[in-house]
Amino acid sequence: MIDRLVEAIQRTHAPICVGLDPQMGFIPDEIKRKAFQAFGQTLEGAAEAIWQFNKAIIDATADLIPAVKPQVAMYEMFGIEGLRVFEKTVSYCQEKGLIVIGDVKRGDIGSTSAAYASAHLGTVTVGDVSFAPFHEDICTVNPYLGSDGVMPFVKECAAHGKGIFVLVKTSNPSSGEFQDRIVTLEDGSSCPLYELVGKKVDEWASDPALIGESGYSEIGAVVGATYPEMGRQLRAIMPKSFILVPGYGAQGGTGKDLVPFFGEDGLGAIVNSSRGIIAAYRKEPYAERFGEAGFAQAAREAVLDMKADIEQALA
Amino acid sequence: MIDRLVEAIQRTHAPICVGLDPQMGFIPDEIKRKAFQAFGQTLEGAAEAIWQFNKAIIDATADLIPAVKPQVAMYEMFGIEGLRVFEKTVSYCQEKGLIVIGDVKRGDIGSTSAAYASAHLGTVTVGDVSFAPFHEDICTVNPYLGSDGVMPFVKECAAHGKGIFVLVKTSNPSSGEFQDRIVTLEDGSSCPLYELVGKKVDEWASDPALIGESGYSEIGAVVGATYPEMGRQLRAIMPKSFILVPGYGAQGGTGKDLVPFFGEDGLGAIVNSSRGIIAAYRKEPYAERFGEAGFAQAAREAVLDMKADIEQALA
Image 1 (cartoon, each protein chain N blue to C red):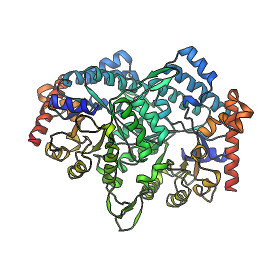
Image 2 (cartoon, chains in turn brown, purple):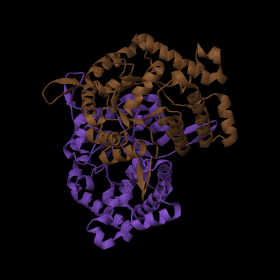
Image 3 (cartoon, one colour):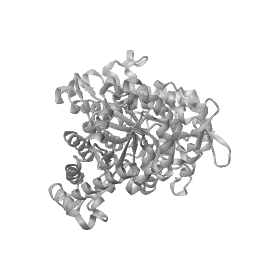
Image 4 (cartoon, each protein chain N blue to C red):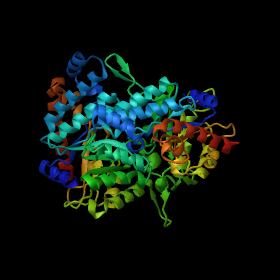
């Protein structure tokens, strides 16, 4: 999967993924009105509104970008109906040639992580028949439980040519509460916890079976755009790993902040923006130009602007 | 919810929850045969088998226990159909008067954790109508992202009288990889990471609005039975928190190992067993007595034995 991602980034000149996190408040009233008319003010109605919204955003941006990152929580909150649209969104994006990064942040004890890995990257067998329930191409993984919580996902990467991004340093304000703590290592030296997790990621990523022709590994990391100095350190610690960088735009990260996440080859990072793109129509300069009816076109324009911002910063 | 849990434990004399983690391999062939006959070797077929299996286990044990803990991964691996049975299981257990602990281990940045908290403990609003998608009574939460990833769940506990158990020290072999690292605190002192997380749990748990008449808080912790010495420390660090203790039975924890998790009041902990109960019929002494057809009766007997084991250890 990592070679496909690298190829798609090089083809589009856009190390960008669009975060498909369709909160109800972002969806234009007209879409909601039609969905509720057809399905009532129900979970089905909400799911239909999300689906129509996603579809329009995907149609308007697919040719510009290599990947999308749906945040499963925004679907899970609408129960079974929401998750049905999550799966439908994954399928639709894949039909359009996009790589789908399922932002699921799962992680548990070994046997349970294996179940999650099957759900999101692999297959399950019922009798003699196999199914791929949510079939994302890549998913995010929480490392708090240690290696045996992560390895089942690594195993699926090897078996099915999939990828993962392990949480190392997250973009939120209180991420430092545990992740920045200075920990003592076996040799008596010390480093922040995120650096130790980064070293583990590098260890997992270094298995030759997981390294593609691009030189990058199927095992990547999540590091928030809001912490560029840590991004620089972690870039050096995990040379074989792509970094998924959330926190650009609405969370405060700027183009300049992104530079340290990229390698000298101009690769090695993919930057996510969610509401900065899907809700672009609600703020200037897009609001006046496109209005609510032009939300999908506004998203396209926001992708182009984000691409230019990153290109300029990297130049 | 915590007062309901304390009352139910006192009524049943059983600080036990049954882990409803129905892996296909645990389900008797006869149940699978019927389910596949009705729905084919499909995800619906798997879901039907899980449902019939769960229902029989619940019917056979509900009068003996205060709570169940379905592990959502075991349902999520069968996609939408699996999650539909997760919700159906939650509803059925609640109808039987059981408290449902959703073992979901979710955790993300603030706005995303809020979506998960709505999905599992709270409600979502569609137009003017509210829905409670998965409506567990309590759920487990991953703390890696820090306070702003946990607080949305705490907020739901306060708003809806629900509870959470935050992962502090997990039961799996490699949990120490990050959780046991010695971290440096603001005052120059140091402690293992799990202890720091435990102190945070105590801080969240100490809000008077979250403390019930029992003196316990809606905010609890997960500490594995496989680490009894750490259980003793954490019991002292988090006096207001109930501890959910996984890892008894199949993972290696014994009755004697459980003592440190309980307070002097004989309360403060609830011990989970999953395959030790739901798959009891596959091992002695239950296999010979009950056979595959008696799987539910074997589960009942295993609950009674577990209860006696804990009672004896605590005496």
